[in-house]
Length: 476
Image (cartoon, rainbow, N blue to C red):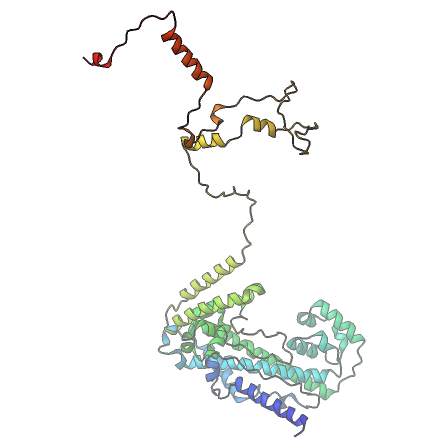
């Protein structure tokens, strides 16, 4: 086996593994009910459309067969029957999935998806046919229905672009001006009568299908208030019908958690045809409903989670046929809007506040007489205070020749020219320690003077006799 063959084999194995991870969702029910894969809230697998050239196709009926199909006619006939005979909420009993009108709503909802696909096919057919006459129109009018309406209005005569009231209802004035300028310089050729007739037939079929789709939407919206009134109030009737169709019914929807409900309708791949929106990951029908899309893009995912949670509560109320007038739905919708308004409020204006007082740590302080005495003993003396003071703009004299820069401050600068000792506070004197309190300081001269006085008193020539009293006599 060569290197190229091995590479191809590896690619085939990788493709098989990918198909195993993302099943195609086979086994869908034929009556419009979704299969088990979609009932579990799985991702909807969208097949990528290939660019098909319809220029060689003779008639549009050979490629677009939905308009004349039997299921399409049956569904539209039943919708006409139920629109003429409105039912009351009291007529529904038991599971809502067993009701025939509910089955019709699910089938009609699935039919709208098929109509959209059919419109894409017809648009490609018209584009391929009309590119012979006006090839630049495709880039000027990207919307499929607007393109089809414009082709039907212009036909072979491109001069109708100017002052055309019908075209003004389809396109904007700026687009009409660009189309008219481009039409005057186009290199296209005239179409034959047969080709022009086929184009008109395709355009009429597309407009009929679009009208049928709007009729289905109107019917579904009018009957969703009968099937699920509370759910319809929150997300709208069309979105509620789509959610119920994918979930497999209202009962299954009521059993589903909010995190799975938010993913219903999520698409794994984008259409490679004429899809004008790029699909975001993990976003389903709820993310694309009007109540969520009305918010700024940065709040939409958060809003989708909130709406999904409220839809779960509303679906459980509807599954038990409670609150038929929609009171629970209105309360939940009001709560959602109140939270949306809260999210979009501007932040409060930041007020300029002065800096708070610094928080100094607690210090261990002692009070009382002993602490005050200690501060007095350790405080600066008056001499030290004068030595620390310096006179501004004067050259200081050094106290010693060896210590340059050491001065005596303002000591002795009162005018005498000598060092004057300031008066010292007695409270700042150092106290004698206890070890020195027992020593006696002896003055020799004071002792000699005391001896001389005693001699003069007792042994002088002028001394008198003294009467000495004995201790015994005193005691007697």
